[in-house]
Image (cartoon, rainbow, N blue to C red):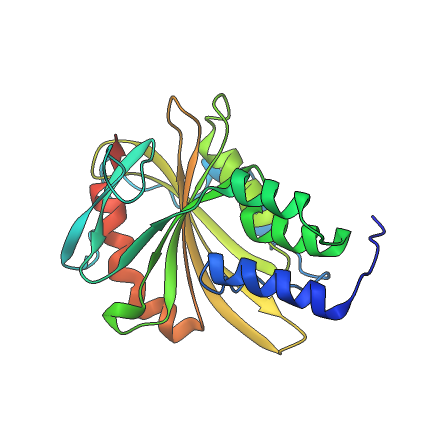
Length: 240
C-alpha cells in the first residue's frame, strides 16, 4: 500500500515516541525475509512436541514477582512470575493508536506506530524491562481477541508478521500451570544493518483470547542471557 510521506522530523518524532513506549522495540525491517520450511507447517503439529507438563526443565531465573492478577502492574488473562529486578509496564495499545491517529501525524508515522503496537493477530499489552537486571532487552506480552484460541495458528501468524524472520522451529509443550502451549525459536535478520539475532516466543489460548510472550534483545548474546527469565514465565504461567 502506498503511504504519503510527510516531514522527516515528524515521522522521526513519532517513531521515537513509539520506540520509547515500547522500550526501543527492535523489530526487523527486511522486506525480503521469509520463514524457513520448518515454519511453513502448522506449528501446533510440530515434530518437536514435548511431553505433557515438560517445559524443558531449563534453568529459571530467581522470582521477582507475579504479573497478570488484578492489581498487578499488568492485568492479563494469564499470570506468571517475572525475574528478579525486571520492571514491568502496562501498554494500552488501542489508546496509544487512537491518540496517534488523532494527532498531526502522516500516514507513514501512523503505520510505524501500528507496526510497533500490533504484530499479526495480537496487540502489545505489557513489557518487562531487563535493563535493571543488567541485560538489554524485554519480555513482551501480546494479546489477541476472544475466539482466536488456536495457540499454534496465532504464533505462526505472529512470526509471519515479523519482517526478516526465518529458520523458525516450533514445538508444543505445557506450561507449569498446565496450559497447552506452542513455542517457537527463530532468527530475525536486518539486512540494512547486516545483523541477525535469535528470538523466542510462545503462545497459549485462554477464554479471553490468545496470549503471546516474546523475548527479544539487542543481539543473540543478550537474548541467551535473558533465557532464564523466559523459562521462569513458561514454568509458572497459568490462567489468571
